[in-house]
Length: 428
Image: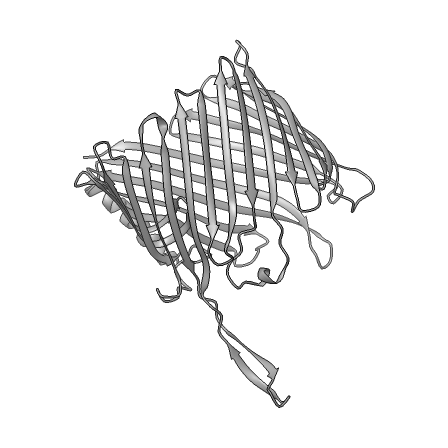
């Protein structure tokens, strides 16, 4: 694993120095400290863990290379393996090739209508029409391993993610798309003792189907002069033969005011033939309305209310508050089937030294009771405070403290210290 990391860094350095025209690099290093009780003897143990995030984009003409990875290690009181490595993205990309084709090859996150996920493979987008208004996307490859490493692949016929999307991008913000996705992931079989037809015990071998998801979807959006906005989607699950998600949203702006309404229908999305197929599942529907008004000083007042309908019950959610460029205050409440809760959130930030030192803080308080399970209300409080020091535009030091208290923890305190480096350079 460490050899693969080293080779990847060497590749990035070689390409950026010898082949590229531009390099966009972000590197973050965080130290995270917390304390928790040992489940066996109850002793308190302090933990210190480090995280590193690296994202890089290297480009030359129509070609480029992008990557995004994370490593983590325990410095005190090792948990699990003590070291983790995840490679989320690592792909070669070609943009507007032959004036009509976009290409990605390697590990990548896919967002194509109903098709979403991580794959190790290829994605192609063909753009046609006078203004490239017709776009056809097709993708396929191995499922990325769950730990974002390089092991535990199956064969391509039973461990893959593939799909396509046909999109139309017209005038006045009209966008519409049809999409399809097929996902399979191999699960190892198992042996078990069963009774045969003569009621004698025998050992049987069971192999599970690799099929997980077969989905199709339709989505659209429309924007008229930045006054009327609407979008929606309808997703269908072929394995369960039902619509598992339907959504419709509309908003209208007039002057400083804006009103919006939305409808959402949801069924749980369940992998084919998984253990969750043995349970009963119910859909729910949600209706929400919202209103906001922006004052001359830039403050925005807003209010939202939603009703969630279940098979035999319903729940009400509401929120009111105001927000500005650097602070905000809101109140949110729940009642009905989801329980009863009333909470407040306040957040703010300010520059202590212009463009060099800034501070931020937030406070969250909630008084709640979970459904009919509890008879008395409980309290929860969370406090967060942080500082960001930026001696120049490329380097930032962040310090953040977190404190929480509730019925389960008398207190829970955590500290995060981070170093962030950003570089954009035109090379050669």
